[in-house]
Image 1 (tube, rainbow, N blue to C red):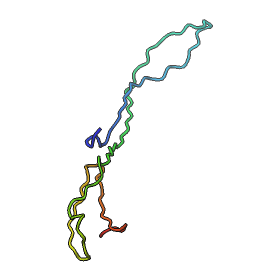
Image 2 (cartoon, rainbow, N blue to C red):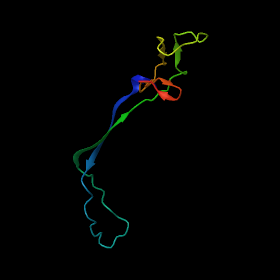
Image 3 (cartoon, rainbow, N blue to C red):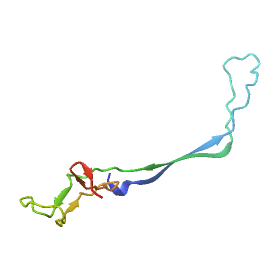
Length: 105
């Protein structure tokens, strides 16, 4: 399965419906002798069920952060340009920046 497998699926079952059998008829005391009669067709009966299938796939590796220089000391007010990239996933990953255990806004 892959991302393209996600979607709505429908299962349908159709059967021929026959008339219910006639009530038993007295066989005049002759046990075990029954006359077989073909049951007429009444039509068709159909049942269906629709369900959604979602294929979930986690990213194949951890996010990658690029930019900046880890050997450099930064001071308050310095400009820093970082990029965070995640591998494809379904549903798409939601990336957040955190600094010293606090979300960056």
